[in-house]
Length: 104
Image (cartoon, rainbow, N blue to C red):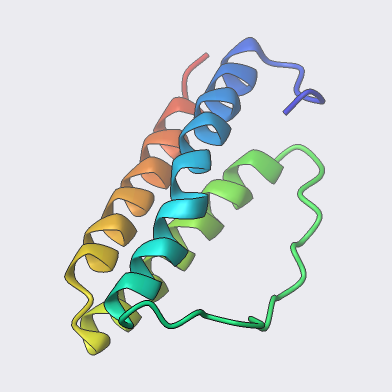
């Protein structure tokens, strides 16, 4: 977000990154709680794409919304109610950032 040239984009991404930090621990800790304390163990991590270029902020926000939808569907299948709620909040954060990126 330090590479942005727009004040609004810089502000929108700064808020996004600040709010994302809350999800980083909340999601796995609650999943492990739903699993009775069982540790998640080695997760298959997908490589994070390089978000560069003019539309990278929009693409990042869209990817967050897409991930949140997948997480919500998975959580509902497992009946992990709060994970579903968190996924909805994460989707809302992505959507709010998409809106903020339209401001000039």
